[in-house]
Amino acid sequence: LWTISCMHMISEEKTIVVIIDEVSILSSAQLALFEDYFLSYYLVLPKVLVVLAGRYQVRTWKNFVLRPRQSLINNDDSTVRELKGFEPNNSEKQISSLEEKAIVFTSKIHSVSGGSPGYNRKIVEQLIRNNFQFDELAALQACNEELYAAVQAAGDDLAPDQAGELLP
Image (cartoon, rainbow, N blue to C red):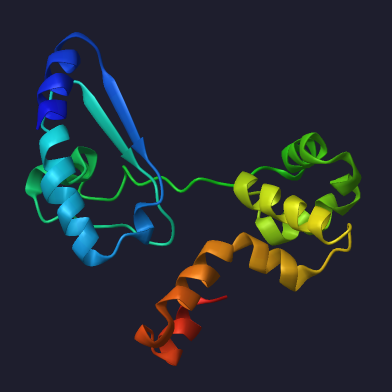
């Protein structure tokens, strides 16, 4: 609670932006705790903006004040923004800065990554480990290694059909 009072004092003077990535990996129970013990306190403070980033789904919040204000005004999801990947030329610049030898694979990397800077990096790292032999399946696995690890860690707790739905 001391962080809330500190943020409240600071937010009276300055605008605070809190960015939280990967909220999509939270379970429903974790999301409920996150809403109850974090969002419900911070979002009611003056001059505090919380940006939540995740993939594949838009979460709904049980608490009315946590719903995006713009969507309440426009009755749509106008506050949800889909981020697009890099254009091929920007992927090429990133790949070149990561590993010059990988630049010959730019179009293949971009076709797998969709221009995602994080996926570009993971594929380049996989290429380095693989002595610059491009393998599309290995590239896809590199992009989704956290997901594969999570499904593997779930082990017997995850039914085979659920695992199949999660994995590309």
